[in-house]
Picture 1 (cartoon, rainbow, N blue to C red):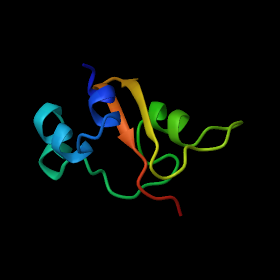
Picture 2 (cartoon, rainbow, N blue to C red):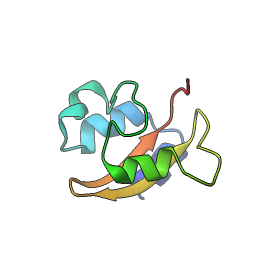
Picture 3 (spheres, rainbow, N blue to C red):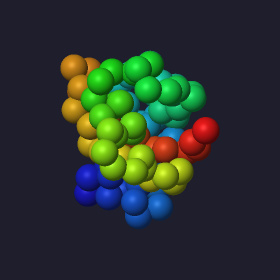
Length: 80
């Protein structure tokens, strides 16, 4: 089962992130905090702040998104 499917089937995003992530945010359950356009890598901007489509709403699981750091699943928690 893919990580995306596991989360989509009800597994906690935070628990999966703690178990699978190799990035520093693993210890906080993958929480990157709040950020706006231009604050993360360009691939995150393209996925979360698209130029022509509606941005993913809160509750959306986005990805996998490939960056120079690997593959990422992003859970949109809030939008301001």
